[in-house]
Image (cartoon, rainbow, N blue to C red; front, side):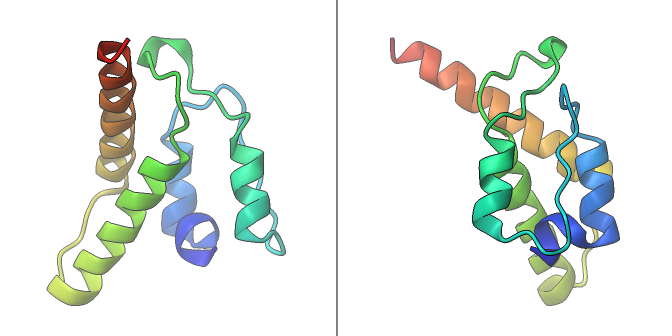
Length: 99
């Protein structure tokens, strides 16, 4: 929970994700409850993203953490948010191709 939602870095990443309504995660919220709250979180329409951005943003937060710990490389928070949005949009577009 700390890595994905509560640390200052994660909070700033989420502030850079253009959600229609912000999702508030309390300190005592468990991961399952956080995922449930994000099920209703939609990106603003100009992004073109219709699916959830939660898994993608969490993935890039996790990999950024690993790069910092194991490779001493840092990522900018805007870069993490942008990567999550980019992959979420790519996922949406790939789903459209299957129809």
